Amino acid sequence: MKGPQALLGSADRMATRMGQAFVGTRAVFRGQDLHAELRHLDWMALYVLGITGRRYGGPQLRLLHALWVCTSYPDARIWNNRTAALAGSARSTPGLGIAAALAMSEATIYGGHPYVSSIDFFIRARAHAEQGGALAGFVEAELARGRIYGYGRPIACIDERLPWVLGIARELELDGGPHLQIALEVERLLVARSPRLRMNYAALMSALCADLGFSPTEMHHFQLPVFLAGMSPCFIEGAQRAPGTVFPMSCAHIAYEGPAPRRWPTPTATPQP
Image 1: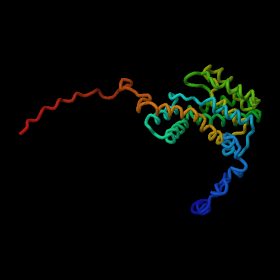
Image 2: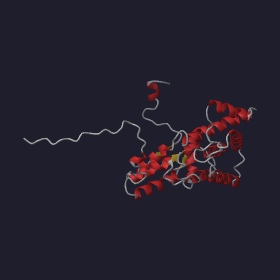
Image 3: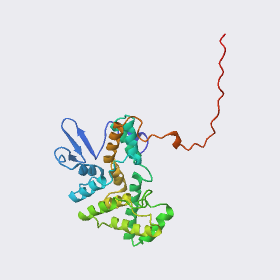
């Protein structure tokens, strides 16, 4: 349906499967009464229910919590946290500052998009393997098309988060899923090419979430607040400092390559009439 008919079908009404607030009586969340049925739900469980429509149990929720906790770095030097710190220094509001920092988290190479690309890769790799295809050939084909997200890291090839999260997944008996096994095998294949192509957090988190049934779209929404807990400390500390003192840069740090400075003639005094 196109044109005016597409609009007329939605005029004066809002059809939804997600929920509705009946102000003064109740609120419905994914077909369940938010207060009567979901009021004791863990916040992560509610958040993931909103994204996926599925209820996750204790071990899965503990793992999902850990995925957020283990990358909550309150370091203002990190690209998105810097935005929060600068917003605090500029005396912006927490809402504006944190929203800007979250928007910065959508970076294509080292932000939210690698999670989406990574989980899409693992889902397709598993389908390829289930059809009898060799993983090595699939990896070669992906590399020929471009890059495989989730491997390699610009600052250090070792990702300090991985052993801790893998340990938690092992404790919860959630470390045996097919996508995680593919992720580990891909790491072995890539490290054979270059020792720097070790798995990073995006691949681990995406593989674990794929094993929990997440789709790429669901992964995109789930990873959105993954850095959030580290942002407010950066904002608060920036706001506590004197305005403008968060990462000031002197002119000496600027590599200027434009026209050379010009000498301006000294104006002569004009005689008074």
